[in-house]
Length: 148
Image (cartoon, rainbow, N blue to C red; front, side, top):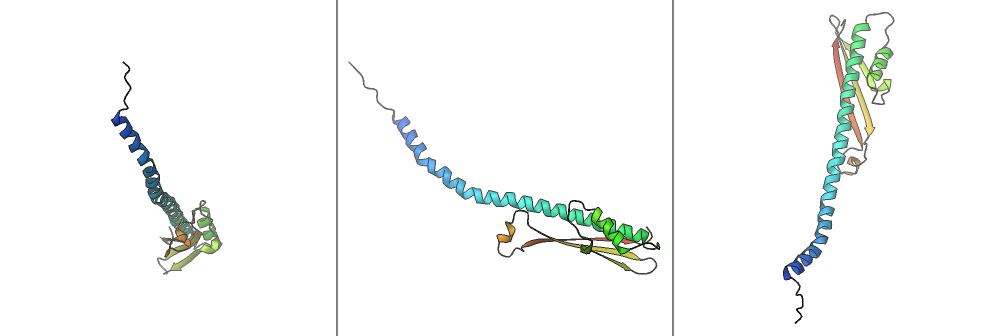
């Protein structure tokens, strides 16, 4: 007597379940991937914007410090304070024209430095979103009392 091996119905069910769900993984991946990419690109853009903001704040403080200390000297020029601000932010491509310096008051006076900087987005993705600006605009301000 020969017995024919009967296929297990559990094994057959398992194979059919695996085959029917193989397309579900691709659909789930297609749904999750855009959300994940937007999240990752947003993290990159936020990190870069935060780095630029910190650099501009440091540059404004340094330019205000330089102007406040050297303003009373005879050889002082606004360009020197602007150069000090540019040197304080090496990670940002600043021009001296981006830095405005104003002195207010007489005794004691305050030096206020404003830096306005605009740069394209790193990934270009936020520019594609309606309502988002085409460029990243960041500013920094520093104020110091004259004489140190």
